Image (tube, rainbow, N blue to C red):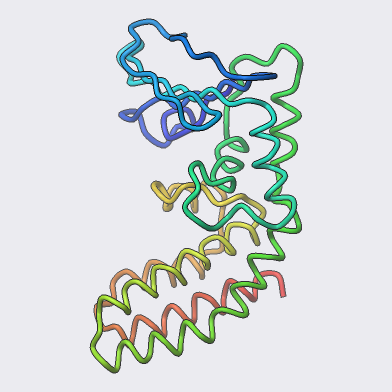
Length: 227
């Protein structure tokens, strides 16, 4: 069993406790926490919620083969896009920064070592996608700005920004965490200051055309990290 999330990693003290229990085979279908309030089956996973020690506890039971599958996806250069839950790249990020709570066989430490640094295939894959997709994104962003279609501009910007964020963390040697406490992660990982300044400047801009220019500069800076 390992713990992850903002409380476990010291980023917050008023959030849920996220616990992941990995099983050799299938997951239990009966409550395993005291004061059980909710048990939900999600495919091969079992999600349980309870209150313990004044904290809301979210416990996810995961079969070992499923966790292996998520990490295999990343090692094959996938697992960072789409609407799957949980997204493998976030699983790896959480595991890399987790605290092992129960690990009698040492398997948990082996898993953490596996995600200590991002798999080369996913690092290269995300970088290549950012390189190839950026010109089309910039073209469509300029069109949206010229037509004053702010909804489309915002939607495209989020897509490109998310891909840039993925590439940035990976280039700096970390799986990208779920984007809830980004400024704290930037600081903790000692991420590139000039890129952090660019990213911060982006959020202060209201003009779509100007925002596109800063986003382009942000992409260029990220791509230059490992060029």
